[in-house]
Length: 208
Image (cartoon, rainbow, N blue to C red; front, side):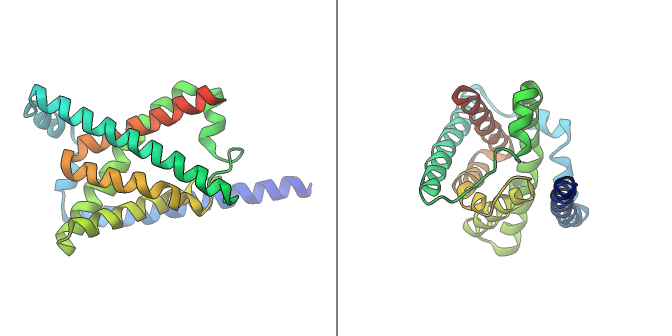
């Protein structure tokens, strides 16, 4: 009985931290979007189609190559940093409690879809909205990328099964995604993020 109560309490705590982070982020971003509706326009299909029509053949190749390079570099840095932390017995994620691990075994296609859809909204919020607003407020691209990377890394603490060290392990990839956004735009950052997630998923499946 105590075991059931304990697991129920832990589940409630996970739910609370997911909701708290989501609500806090929603309130901040919602306030920004109300003041600057331009951010919402960037999510509309007509904005994307308009931007895509302006990109020529060679520009597409450069954008995709840059995004894949960022994804691959981010992945290598994340793996290297994760291995380094493990040497000191610092835990980043608990595989038993991390939702995507169990879902990947049972519903791999659903997880693949999720890790390619979520980056659209994550990049829009943490790069598209936050970096643009930080640049507007502080007039510094460097400062904007740092703030965005720290917030993005810290936001993942809301995921069940994560530990504080995840902020450290995700920071290099977060910084690279911010730089990618500055030079390739929102589309490039989304491609880089989705590729990173997909690479991670494939490596996880091959190493199991």
